[in-house]
Image 1 (tube, one colour):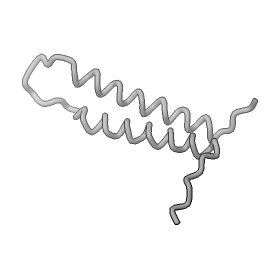
Image 2: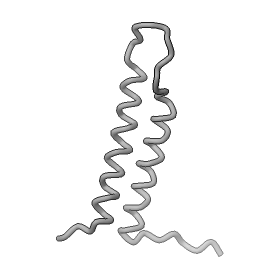
Image 3: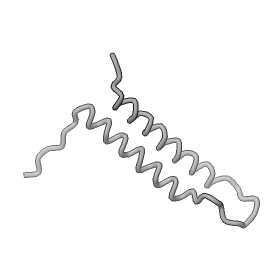
Image 4: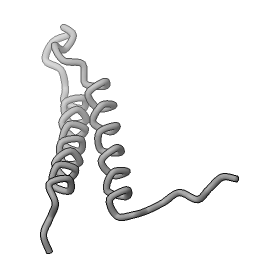
Length: 72
């Protein structure tokens, strides 16, 4: 079984999205040492990571041939 470049890129996007979400969740739960705001806001990073992961999963479904039924 050979993997296409499209599948590899989609898998990397999924791993990146999940990793970004995990990093943001871990850094959000870490206790603060000072009351200064963080340099990188973690909530938007988590949101972007989830969106990337969902789009990658939908792309995997499209590659696998899943089709939506007609709505008519």
